[in-house]
Amino acid sequence: MDKGKSEPTGHQVTPGRTNQKLRTRTAILGAAAELMRTGREVTMPEVAQAALVSEATAYRYFPDLATLLQEAMAGQWPAPAEALASVRGSGDPVERIAAATEQLMRTVLAYQGATRAMIAATITRPEAATARPALRIGLIDHALAPLSDALGADSVVLAQLKQDLAIVISAEALFTLTDLCGLDPEDAIASAVHTATTLTRAAVQQGSSTV
Image 1 (cartoon, rainbow, N blue to C red):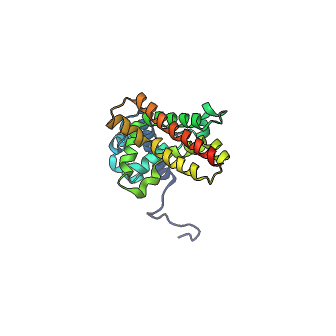
Image 2 (image 1 turned 60 degrees about the vertical axis):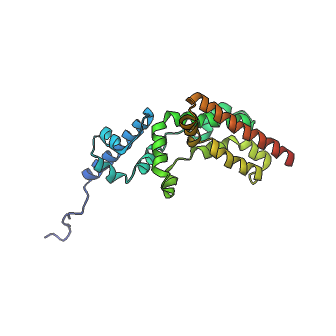
Image 3 (image 1 turned 90 degrees about the vertical axis):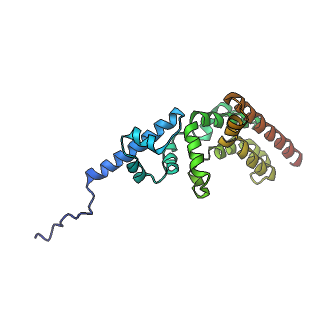
């Protein structure tokens, strides 16, 4: 045997095999993203069917639905500055929070099936919570940037407001209003905007009295 050559082993992965695995993974992610955009419920069997693979194959690439949705959601959302472009020139925290609230709520409605699936997949597994995109945090921080400049980033008032708004500007709040309170989506959005702006207005007034 020529010592300058090594014999192939059964463990070697050929370029063709690597490319096939990449294509399969890409197909699964693409199918998940496409289903997400319909607003319908997203399940692993539906994703597998849309990707033309077996459910077992889908699970070999993604151990659970939360992991798949996390990757499929990546890059789907605009950055906070882009999402709040309509209030870019405003320094009014109340107006900016109103825009942030409406932006998040309409995004949740557009991707309602995937959002519900993500919540369901992580609510009983706190260790998996990092799979959720946490869009609200970036939107709230960006919307309150003028208030942060005025009060200081370490302001107790600002920190409390951000915590309060994280409850209100959320998919959970929207689903509470639609599912439990029976509001239609537009009324639910209006209610969330009202609550978020009321909280922000009160914090602005409180902050002004302590500065």
